[in-house]
Length: 257
Image 1 (tube, rainbow, N blue to C red):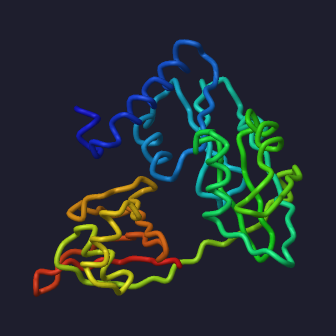
Image 2 (cartoon, helix red, strand yellow):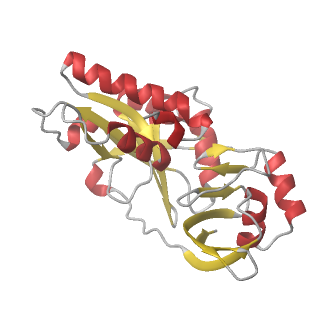
């Protein structure tokens, strides 16, 4: 059976990486810790590793509710502990009475440090509180070099994971009908904007499917996909429930602003 036929072409490179991780655990007989993975990458790891008797997998990103998590692949003898995932939690200290900071500003400042996105987990924002989850191997570097977010001077204070901000994921659920499962068509219905507008957003690189930019309006979406549009929010396809009498697709979705 060809493993790759079950995945999109753009995912094949990541599959190769997972296979290398699996082989390393088998040959070296020791654990392998990955960078932070988005939910789609986590699903690929689960599917590729499958029920391999020689390699187990666990995921952790700082708390049970976070999206981005590190994967630990390990031989059967190994018993993973929370510390094995090597995650640091930072609170962002800034003049919250005078300044409001947004997720995109925080992420932009982190990415300007020159580190891979995979070294950072979720960015947690609740009221005026902001926390960052960071791979421990770069924690000292981040603490030393992240001094500004936007034009605001900040400092970082390391906290135990038990102090993490608790966020609850909430989706506004609905059932929509669409003429096709094209990306532009689904986004148009989900966010109540014209297809011309969604096509423009897609072509300008403002749309992601499963955390990766997609610039083709005709891209076909699948059940389980998470779509995000800069400035509009996110949409998750919970299920594709067949066709109506008028040959339109009935799709159960959730949206977040």
